Length: 351
Image (cartoon, rainbow, N blue to C red; front, side, top):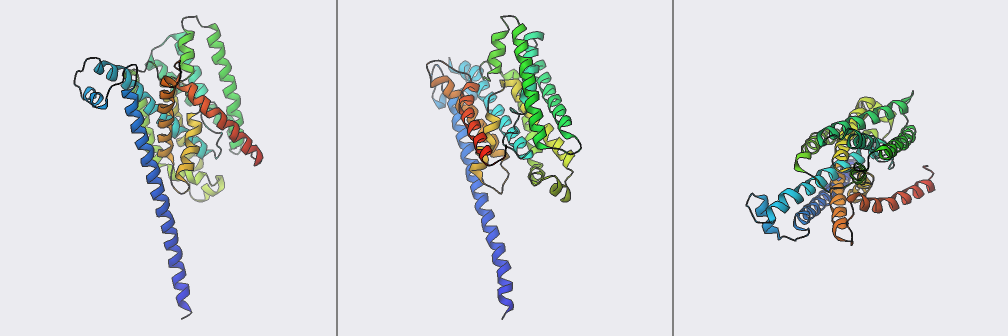
């Protein structure tokens, strides 16, 4: 009789753990489904709204290839590229930001703060103002510059032992240097090139063209499955260098692979839309708070990024007397959160 409690207790514990996992899984599916549905609604709004509002049935007919006077041009040529640019760039910013923040175990360690975006931006401004290059060249150079920037930061932060704090500090220093380069390029540029560069630097979906989107779409679709598959290693690295190594994870190789994928997607997104402020910074924390612990938040972070970009673009177009680029609106949303986060981290002694 004394053996019965010992036999029942482990079974009850296992069932309790399974029940908790099922609850977390249902929460993940509900949150992800809700975010996806909201993204679809915003995509539809991007196609329907403009100087002229078109009903959904006319938009669908125009997208299916039917020629409708006024509607076909506005939807297929103007609104569809803008919507797709926001869709894929928002997803790219979201997953890149989440990967950096989770990998480096610090909410400040996102591409905007540690200099990766500034590397891509400096290269793009150089192409726009000095070389006056086209979209394909600008995209290629921006990706290469973003990758080169993160390699330099990683090498300088590596030392004898990899240090997250050192990487963030070096990244902030590199970012300041690259921002100075951008300012110098704008200063020496001709007057006709400066407005386009400044408009691009503010982060904007204006003027998006279908011909510029294939690199963004291709790299996002290639890198996202890689980041999903490596998700278990990403969360193992969260436990710390020694713990991850003891569990059989090749920390340096895994970290480099994750960083390279994240840099590729954020660099090509930056080259396409400009550095849309704070999306990569906000998407990960919002997704984690919505999903909770226990499940990978990469896809929810990407969906949050989509919703932030599309919603901010709609607000910038229609909520004010004057129209504002999407980066201005996301900057207004992200700056207060950054101040709040810094105050909270300082109170916890993390700064």
